[in-house]
Image (cartoon, rainbow, N blue to C red; front, side, top):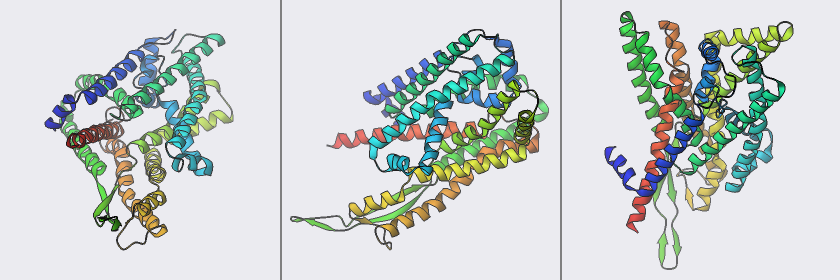
Length: 425
């Protein structure tokens, strides 16, 4: 590991990419402390501390929400637009063909639609959120013009943050959106440690130790599952070109246990937050009638930890299968194997190979989906038994941090390997 780190900083190109990535993250953190006008800091702090929902949103805004900065929506609108576009691939074959079959040009067009959809979503979220905070007394009363001006600023902040995320992704050091979320989680660590010392209780030492041990076990499990893969044997048929014979070798096709990475967790949290967010907004505007009863039902549903945990677990599992099905096209892979003269021993090329890959992927993904779901609801399980709240968003934040770190290290390692290959030429 130390040797790899030393190699990273020896290569000028990789070193420059790392420094540029850190520079953009620093720019994001600086922009995240610029507040919108008229914020009552004390009321905002009390409001966020008393509301778990907005504590979640604060994590995914990179801490910007805690200051009501110009980037207070964070990457939330972009994640929401991406989810909507991914869901549309299941409804409209044109979108599915664009994403899976039209190559890089199709994916670029698909991503462009996601960016365009993000703008009205950010405007809607910004307007409703500002009105909610105004009704809660967090910000001073604003005229319609002032509200719209702030909405424009907030939407611009989300667009800039999306742009920063895509620039970071182009450096191939890691996924820009994931790194922004990671920076938001990591930025809260000092205050979490401080609160842990302030609220220290000598009578709960055993519980604290158990949490530390559990965290280590979870990290080890995350690494094990993320690195785990099922290797499918692949044979290449012999071909004669001129006087030389090619092929006849054996290789393997790796099927990862968790191909979706951290995306299912982010998708599931976004879906879980959306009805709660609507309920919070509705309760601020309506004081009686059918809408109030509906919001009370939604709040009661999500305040029930058992129901909340079951719904969260099922969403993580569903999104794991869903995202894996989108990113891993067994038919396309079977076609590529056939074109290159490769085949799976004992399986006929073409549709039989595609069916075999699809069936195997579903079985392998089952273990990854179960693990992600259990880790996601583990804080709720431990809280139910111990009565203590796990820091931040518990297993979910730990899962995001470890998964993003692994993905970043993997991309760095691939760049090092590529340069080592270039050195032999």
